[in-house]
Length: 112
Image 1 (cartoon, rainbow, N blue to C red):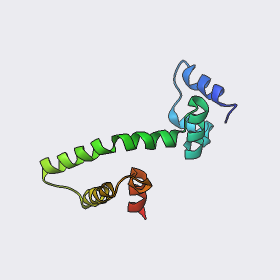
Image 2: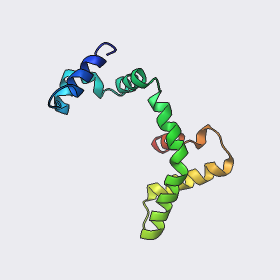
Image 3: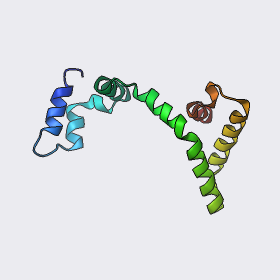
């Protein structure tokens, strides 16, 4: 996919009428693969997309949790899953920082 970036860009940006997403995907199906999207982003920006995403998610997590709690308080309703996530977050926050305090670890815990 290294050699096709310029070609893809020319076809999408340089076309008088933008191609349909389906046409682009049919032509370059690798763009639907997560690993290829990450690799493409890294080639273009020299940034690890996954690491950057989790870094920003960690930065915004406290505010997101505050918003969820405020919404739950206002509506008087909260899903059991949200309660469980909040409980896990509170327990881990009380322990002090370590790798298991990240949103990724919380997500993995919920899936596991």
